[in-house]
Amino acid sequence: MAVFTVDFGHCLSGGDTGAGGNGYREENLTRLIGNLVIIGLRNYGHTVHAIQLDYANSVAESLNYRVNRILAINPTQSISIHINAGGGTGVEVWGDNLCKDMCNRICSNISNQFDMDNRGFKNGCEDLALVGLYGSSSIPALLVECFFIDSLADCNKLNIQKYADCIVAGILNQAVEKNNTIIEEGVKFNMKNVVVFTREFEGDGLIAQMWASALPEGIAVNNYKKIDYSKVENVYAVGGNIGTYTGYLKPENFVAGGADRWATLRNFQAKIGK
Image (tube, rainbow, N blue to C red):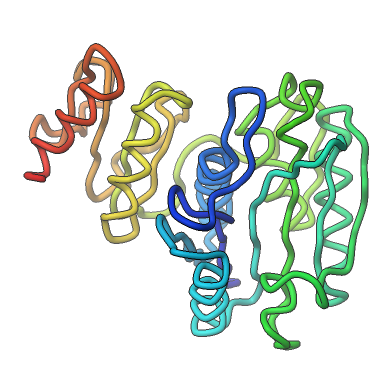
């Protein structure tokens, strides 16, 4: 089985946040897509390491951290998730020639699934640290620019799960049919810590991401995903009512939703003693 790194692209705050547009933030969307890519790859038995940094003082500091983490892990394939901006539309994947075919497969999958422009493979070895990995030629690396966040047409087609499915299918050289998915629902292999939430773009999802990042091998998952919780070591949940969630959820691992995201955040802080 392969070893992958999945980088979430930008920090949540500080000097390396992502682009914004049409009510979305790149750094939030890449975490949502990236976590589902991780789940998809792990479902096939692969080892996957999340590369995330929530705060950095500068872009250089952020890139140094990401590149050094990837080089230390020495994965079979490095993957970075981004959202584009700048007035265009469609999908493009930057990579090196070691994984050019993989990049083209991801582009084709996303373009076909979302009926958007296929901007194709672009060699990023000279221009992008997370592709060139500061001159390393031994680790295949790619960077997916899923769509343009400042394009209303692209944003109107947004489907987090479909993006993840298209990326995983491209990486594993699997066929993906339009309006279908090759990613089986359910966790096939043991997982350590899963934080479940109900509202993807509200406070629940962001808090779940924070909680998962603080847990060993933690992953945040939307409650609509069908998961075999009997294979999850610890189940946590944020928002809604406790009855919304699986019977594997222990009351002490539940954070109740508040009247708004700030109230839910205060409930979370009280739970973890911050």
